[in-house]
Amino acid sequence: MDNDIEKMTFEQALSKLESIVKELEDEKIPLEDSIRKFETGVKLSSHCLAKLNEAEKKIEELTKNDDGNLSVKDLKLAD
Amino acid sequence: MLEKNPIEEVIKTGEEYTGGGIFPGKDSMHIYSVSELNLDIKKNLESSFSEVWVEGEVSNYYCHNNRHFYFDLKDESSKIRVVMFYESNKNLVFQIENGLHIIVSGYISLYEKRGEYQLVALSVRPVGKGELILAYEQLKARLDSMGYFDVNAKKKLPLLPGSIGVVTSTGGAVIKDMITVLSKRFENFHLIVKNVNVGGPTSQEEVCQAIDDLCSYGVDVIIIARGGGSIEDMWAFNTEIVADKVFKCSIPVISAIGHETDFTICDFVADVRAATPSVAAQVVILDKREITDRINKIVSVLKKHVENRLLYCQKQLESVTSRKVFKKPASLLLERWQELESNRKSLLSATAVNTEMKKSQLASIISYIDAGRIKGRLKLHDSNIAKLRYILFSDFNKHIEELKNRMSLLVKDLQSNSPVVVLEKGYAFLFKKDTRKAVKSIGDIETGQEAEIILFDGILFAKILDKINKKF
Image (cartoon, rainbow over all chains, first blue to last red; front, side, top):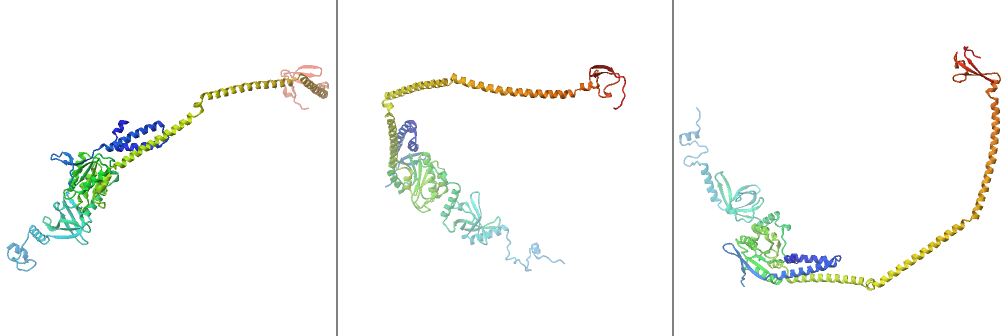
């Protein structure tokens, strides 16, 4: 399960997290299950928050050389 | 004499014909070949109508080999053939179609092969509206009918794109505005910009190439952006090649062309239309603070749920453990034992009472079976029997007496009617000896047969000698 969460996209993790909240609203589920779900939820939320901070700020320009190969360099903007 | 045909004569002799008629004199006469004449007319027509503007409605339009256009231009009472060669029509932005009201500029030419004149169109413009507006409307209607704007074909934008591709001019304010908005919403965004001319004649090809390049390089979403301008400025985004590229792009595309009031074909085809490039920067990625708050809120809701659940379960557990069975289990056993004991006792006593009761019932039955009482009852029965016997016997004797009397009467009666009495009077009975049947008629016995004659004092054996038939 932990492995699965690691592989999840942000969207997948967030939607799973939201579905867990809905499931926990159902008071009929056994206590053990609700605790397990809570633990999963906490892991999912950490995964989501990690995803948010995963990317590094980059502003790049895509260029193509004469051979048609694509590469990026930092974008320089005129003031 | 036959009159000579003057024309034949002239042709034959080459002499001058002076006899009048429709033909002019030899000096002024010139006879054309057909080609010559057509060529002459062509020269005249092309010099006289070398530049004309003519307005009319298109009909019978067709495009030959995807290159040259042919159609009629007509008004209420007349029409003219028009040809527009590829060289002239290749840059036409709108499409010629039947019923379209246009002004054609060009020259009149003659197609010598058939001797037909036609208008060679060099340029065409619609009447009533600009050609770009017309072209826009035509393309929009066509793409719409082809499903390019279908809501079901729209791709969903990723919530958190790892990298955002932008097709725009890096020279303008557009990219700066977008970066400003992005920085406020999500400081660690990753932008990959492909610089293109967003106006001018090469714009549409550049935009298409940029989309391809971003797709091959790999981004999660593409924004196509340019600032406001005239319809001519933004024309690249109203072309079919850009529309087609956006529609077929495998990555979600946000179109942000011009101001809020500008709607380009690209906007309609894109998966999301943003009113302006700044709006596109808002739409493309979620607000980090907002989403962080939301996730934290979700976690606290989760915690609350589980806490409440635990609290509830704890209370339930308490209410169970506070019961006597858990607190004083021995007392519960004692209680049970006592209960058992009392049950045993009451069971025993109930059995004893029951036995006593049955005993006394038996005694009372025995006491009821009293010998004296039984004897009395027997005596009573005896006397009843004697009575019945008396009644029975006295009735019986009477009955016998009656029967005796009736008997003697019957005997007397019988005696008086007895055959013996008849015999005593001297009569006899005759029987057939073999059958012992009474012979009442002479037919009952045959001659020679033996018979018995019964008299009052004995029997005579006789043989029938003869018969005489005689009635007495």
